[in-house]
Image (cartoon, helix red, strand yellow):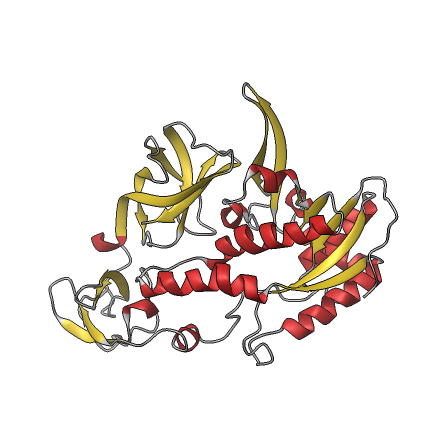
Length: 374
């Protein structure tokens, strides 16, 4: 890993978060081609049992270093595990303990990748940071002056603006997203063309610090089990849960009630069971049968801890919103925001709107921000 050079590139210095995956690797190559002085930075955010079969930190580091060498950019390693545990993981456990289902990737972006990482990059003399996220940044001039907008990626199948909705003006002013303009298929093609060894590497999935490990097993190491009854809306007991923290609204697998027939489909098979509600006071998990059961559908939601990209809430009116990643924008009406809270009324009922997840608001391709579903 080479020392940071003092040379000045035509477009200045940019520090790229390199994870060892194909997206951040091609990001580094593209920026070098565009005339930037590129420094690759590998962030280690998790230390617990990272030598197990579920954590690939060491291999990812080797992949990132190999790509940096191949592309011809400088490379550094930084350990943010303490910051991650304090700013992201502690909040993750608090939310699950309260019966909600948080999205740690949203908080990781706001607190680690675009805060701790950004601060570190600035200390290296960088003008910008860049990541392999699929999103775009645009500087727009308006009546109140110029501001930075967060936009969806051109490749709608890979757009990650949902996870970036808590970024602010200062962060966006320093951020580059080269992949926002090109499809994923082109990213793979470029990686093969320039001879990157990780061109066909599988994309990482799931929560970053859990990896592919069984989720309930992982969470059980940090949160106590508190078994209780699983009931139907009519009050019939159909099973026993392990603890409300281990279940999320809309969950279908792992309920242990498959042997209970209840309602049947036209072909005589039993309708699937879904988690529909949690009663924290009585420690009851409610399940329903059928994907479109009324308990799984919502006309509206209240969100809290709002964060707006422009630094101010949008005006009340008609917008699109996502209540989960990869969902199509749902037409909705935003009521006037009250402090850090806002209300959305949907044109059509939404399925399994889950407390703790993010409700993200859009005006066409522009991501306006969002909040945590309450």
